[in-house]
Image (tube, rainbow, N blue to C red):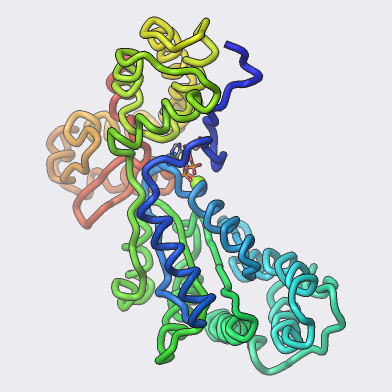
Length: 393
Ligand SMILES: Nc1ncnc2c1ncn2[C@@H]1O[C@H](COP(=O)(O)OP(=O)(O)OP(=O)(O)O)[C@@H](O)[C@H]1O
Ligand SMILES: [Mg+2]
C-alpha cells in the first residue's frame, strides 16, 4: 500500500499514531494537572523506568505537550555524560520562560525571572544571559550559591510559588536520567524532597525517565529516594494494547487487518512497542490492500525483524568483546528475557568465582547492554536481545 500514507512510526521518541496501553498512567497525570490548576497543589515526583524502546520518551513528550497546552511552565532535558544537568536544565527553561512572558502577566513573573536569571548565570554562563522576553532585575542570593542541590531546590520553590499564583503548574522532565552523575541525582532528590516538605506541596512536578536501573541509582544517591517518587514502570504492552497499537493506525485509514494477520503480527512483535511499529510499517508497505492479510505479515514481519536486528541488536552485539559475548550468551541461555543469577552465569561460563566475571559484567553495564535489577542479578536492557543472540552463529 502507499508508503506515503504509512501511519506507523518505528524509531526513538516518535509519537505513535495510537499511544496504546498507557491510559492509566496518563489518567493519573490528568489528576496531577487538575490538582495543580484547581488547588495549586503538586504531586510527588514520578519515575518512569523501563527497557529500551518501550515508550518512555514518547510518554514524556505527551506529558509535556499536555502541560504546555494548559499554559504550564515546562522543561524537558536529556541527561548525557558530556553536559552538566544544571546547564541543560537552565538551557531548557529559557524558552519556557520566554513563552511564559508572552502568556502570563509579566509583573507576576518578575521574581521568578530574576531568580532564574541568577541561576542561569551561575550554571550556564554561555547562554545564561539570554534575553527572557521581558526586562529582568537579577535577584541574587536565592538560587546562585553554586551548590546545585541548594540552588535547584530554591529554583523549584520559586517556580512553584509563581505557578501557584498564576494558577498553573511547572513540569520538569529529565529523560535518560540514569546517565546523570551521582551528585546530580542527589541534587534532584534533594530538590524534589524539599518540594514535598510543605504541608501544601507547591505545584512543581518532576518526572525522570530511564532504564530499569534508575530506581536503584536514585536510592543509592539518597536512601529516602525509595519513598520520594511514584515509580511507574513502563513495560511491554498487554495483548489488548498491542492489538490496538497494530490495528488502530491502519483502521483510521480504513484498512482493516484480517484476524489471522493480527495474531501472527502480535506473535512476532510480542508486545514490544518499537517492534510493533516496525512490524506495522513493513507489513503496510508489503500489503497490496484493501485489507492486511497473513502473507503480508509473513513478508513484512521478516523485513521488520531484519530492521530491528540491524538497528537495535547487532550494533550492541558487535560492541562486545569475545569475553563479553560469552557472558551475554550465557545470560540469554539462562535468563532469556528474565534476570539471571550471577552465580549461575559463573558456572555456565566455566568460571570459578563471581569476580572472574566482574570485568565483563561492568563493561557491559557501562556500554548499556545489561543492568543489575538487584544485587547479584543481571538482565538485558533491550527486550528480545536473548532471541537475537540465539540466532547468532
Ligand atoms: N504506547 C505505545 N504504543 C505504540 N507504540 C509505541 C508506544 N510507546 C512507544 N511506541 C513506539 O515505540 C518506539 C520507541 O519509543 P520511545 O523512543 O519512546 O522508547 P524509549 O523507552 O524512550 O526507548 P529508549 O530507552 O531507547 O530511549 C517508537 O517507535 C514509538 O512510536
Ligand atoms: Mg527514550
